[in-house]
Length: 120
Image 1 (spheres, rainbow, N blue to C red):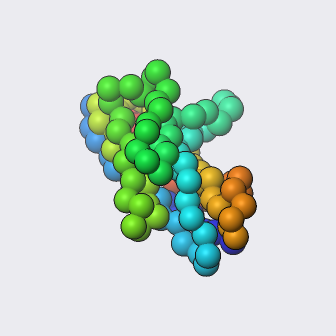
Image 2: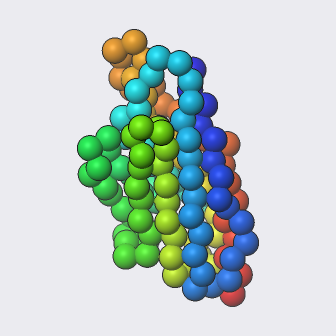
């Protein structure tokens, strides 16, 4: 089993910045792609950004140029730097990790979610 623990959410005014962190812990695992997703009230969960172990990134069009995803492989940690925040970014943000256990890839884990609220 792998646990994903998120931190860094909160309340910020429009135009402000927040940095989310997500650390993976457990035994005998390696983390492949990590990512951030978000879910606003009444909406489906959507992709925000992903990053492979090698550093290749992918962003939703709505956050390109404002958000930056990065990771520290030694710490099994992924970050999401969010700048120029807009009230439309208000949501619960979830960390996701694709994990390999005992040489078998494809184990999918989610964090508990962290609330980001952007006031206008």
